[in-house]
Length: 116
Image (cartoon, rainbow, N blue to C red; front, top):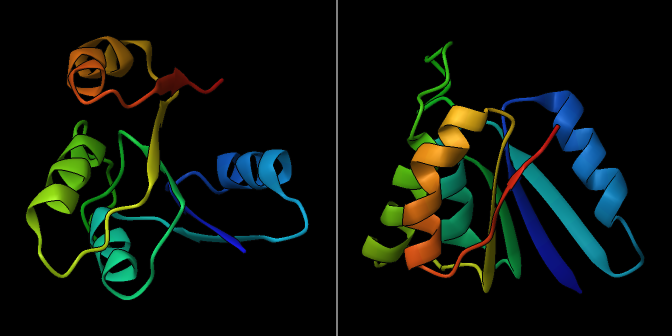
């Protein structure tokens, strides 16, 4: 079984990603905030995490933060109770966010895509 975590506050994009990677033997879960993702990563090991760069910090935040996805990736490597996923894919639909985040992802050999 391959476990995938999608971290994205855009439900339509979550549906698109889910449709693109759905297959027998693939278990897909999703959350909409950085804090929800950290909670999931404390209790489950994932093979892949697809992380939107701009997302809310928590459920009480209505507006996505420009670098919450980057901060999530940093937190994954710092927290001892969190199980880092085997692979991470960064996504964003914002070209400026992509440009600002690209160096961070490149330095860590993590792919980042603009999802239209």
